[in-house]
Amino acid sequence: MVEWTKSKKRRKPSRLVVFMENTYLDRTAKPIYGLTFLLPLIILYEVGTLAFNTGIDHSQIRVVSFLWIQQLLGYIGLTPEIAWIGAPLMVIVILLAMQITSKAKWKVNIPDHFVMAAECVALAVPLIVLSMLLNRPAMEQTILAAQSPLPQHSIVAQIESISIFDTQDDAPDTSTQNLMGIIVTGIGAGIYEELVFRLLLIGLLVIIMQDVIGIKGTHAIIIAVLISSLVFSLHHHIVFIDGHFVRPEAFSIASFSFRTFAGVYFAVLYAIRGYGITAGTHAFYDIIIAVLNSVVFTAPQGSEG
Picture 1 (cartoon, rainbow, N blue to C red):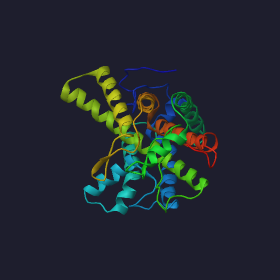
Picture 2 (picture 1 turned 135 degrees about the horizontal axis):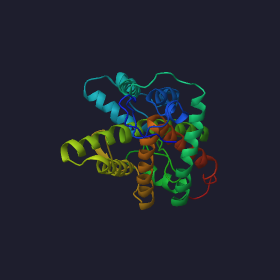
Picture 3 (picture 1 turned 120 degrees about the vertical axis):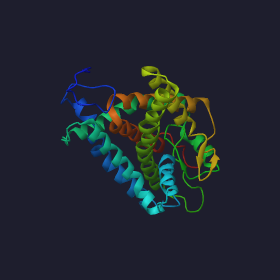
Picture 4 (picture 1 turned 60 degrees about the vertical axis):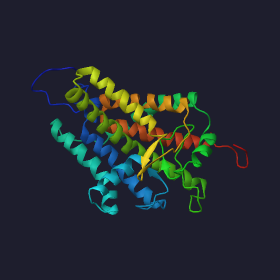
């Protein structure tokens, strides 16, 4: 049950919808829950990118939004090693700042995290079903994307577009390693794409709409959500990275429309459930799709694709 209140004594929420206090929905939407829930995934992504021979500078598996943060930190003078650590630290610092400004309680109920994981899986199901309805099997789009001028780009996993690995001699040579690498990349995409396109971009757009353009209230939020969703979808087809624009994936109306819808879906989810559940849902969606691609939709060896 959603509780709307104008009481001055009520703590300032970090989201648009406020639930009845001390319920599961209220507790787990707090920034501190987002931090404790995502921290294992953040560590897994950092360790995983090293474990699969991705390195700090020359990754075989790279999440573009993560690289944007790295390059921003490098631009202001940080070394690649510190910038690599700086990206997850940015997530941690932002969530801690949100927790402080929300004035919410810091108590965390550990068993809630297992329910959060199940909730993320459940929330990913509508996107999985829609992706299956809209898109063709993974093999065709993977072949197209592998011919991209940026073979080391990683994109949001869905039925017809999975993370792209280096196609040279140092590319992963086993299906298991390939799958694990895609899963690691999907986790990173969930964390850092939601950070860039939902938490940061929507907030920035709302400020611009309200304080610069003069569009107020709900209209500003709706416009910000639509713009961020379109940019989120577009960045899978046209990416500015390493100082130039590249096309990591062939454009199709189906995939562009799906990702735009996914952007709106994640934005609404962020407004209702907070960053932790949204990033978790995105990550679990990528993981499930990676497994489905590997187990169900992979073409038999030796078949033409």
